[in-house]
Length: 196
Image 1 (tube, one colour):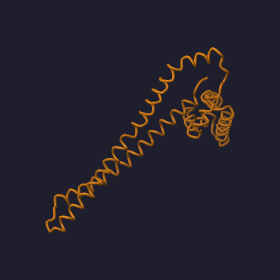
Image 2: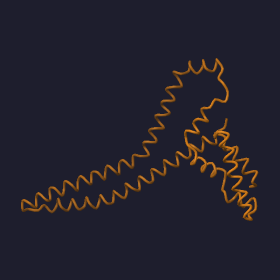
Image 3: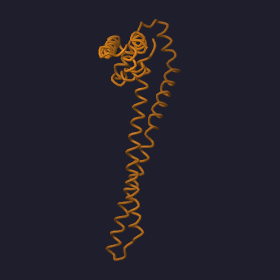
Image 4: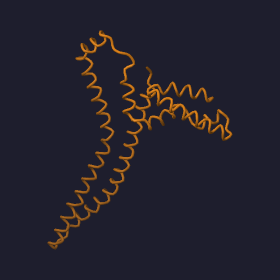
């Protein structure tokens, strides 16, 4: 891919950004390509080093605030006519509940990504409570002179389980955070690539 082809495709894929940000990004990527060409690379090699335009959009999405994207999307391209305003008002009883359902579904899906994390932390809390209870009963039985080895052994098993589940808690949290970050970047990339 040539520099001009890359820049043309990138400009087309940055449609959801404000115009001044598009120009800043275009200048940045053009300068990156030129720098690589100054280092002795061919135009195609310089473009290949940067990656695809989708990768560039994803990088830009990670660096762009969501508020910037929302402001650009909300910016009116043209004023609404009287008929359009009337239709929006009259159709409110239909589109508003549908919007609320869509937002509720999106929120539910987001919360479901955290279910595994909540479950592992709940299991960890249960094991810690088992350790505490088992140790209290074992110590009390020792004071009475008849040690309850079954309870003491159960407390030791809970300690081992708690260590294992603690590792699962950390892993589940990392995976969920990465998943949510990728979903959020994907949404931002779609907004940036949006067409008028």
